[in-house]
Length: 473
Ligand SMILES: Cc1ncc(COP(=O)(O)O)c(C=O)c1O
Image: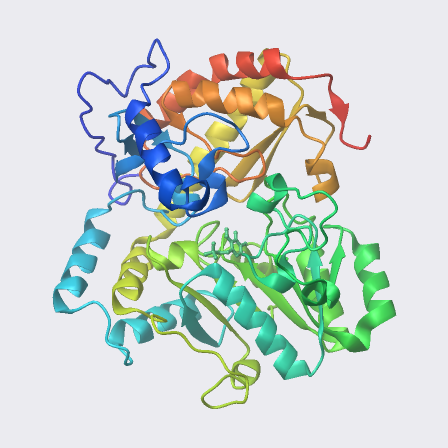
């Protein structure tokens, strides 16, 4: 992609040559030391559970720096990064123009607790790109979905929330019921909600339905329509692995909500500004002619900083304080450094960037499938826009919901993950996550991934148990 897509500039890591796979597993002594030290002062040694490698075992790598498509850990190992900070880094690590904008913003001060110009400019950019008429900034995706739910309840005067099994919307009490992402590998026997610490009352007003199941949605609205405040869904789920909506499913959700006076909340924290310049809505709603009532954003729009947002119909947003009765606030909401980083990122996120990320995702996802087939490993590779993931040990056309995703062979993924890691490719350390690429993933980075696949597919083949059809228990 001439002009718009940067080459990556990996660090020189001593004798490590990032273009060739190491003959032996990378050294992890420094990471192990830091992990032990972290354990003493932080529960589980990490500040977000999936980082602990519990689902795959082994030593979590402590990263020291990132450049373009590459991560470098404290032992000096380099990796092609296929998580991109779990989605935000659409332009890769340390993009010079984003960095320059941030440095300039920091030089003026870091937080004022007053309105600032970059907040308005970022809000204008989001309104311009998406379906939302107004937007309010918060600091995390969790805060965005929590606030959207409160607003939907305040607007409708109703309590019930409908969500889908396997969709993750952050660690909001009322949404921690059959959630994907970290909760998918954190099963606490007999616990409904999905974690202790959430009172049953908090999820008592949450209905959980199977994803992509129109009949289940119709039945829920038939039984509870007048009590349903909102239906929240990932715009295209990436937190049970990638399980995209069946054609027309989001439109159907939008219509059934409208028919019953419920708010349709499309969670674009992961997909927003990533799968297209207008997010998932750019791939379905904008084409099909419908709009969600509320949308949540995060990740890419924060440019690697803690920034997120929720927005939507002006009449619904008007219910928010200070103009309306629904209270919502935040000390660092719309922080000038974070919104400057987000604005710089979105301004650089041109059609060429998306074309490059789309093409790279197609290349890699096809290659993953080919190598697994060559190694005789049953699998399903699924993409939702330029996000994709692999379900090992499954056979069949597609994985449509969380029940099917949960039948994958996580032991095979563990073997696959470590074989890739040993060859300098950093995949999500859980089978229930999407793989992410960036504009900085150039030919050299992609080639390192392609070169690592055959050995990883062989390792998965040695670990996989009998193929299980996705429809079997
Ligand atoms: C779809 C979706 N919604 C909400 C969240 C929560 O965002 P955060 O981790 O910033 O709280 C996530 C996080 O991965 C997400 O993927």
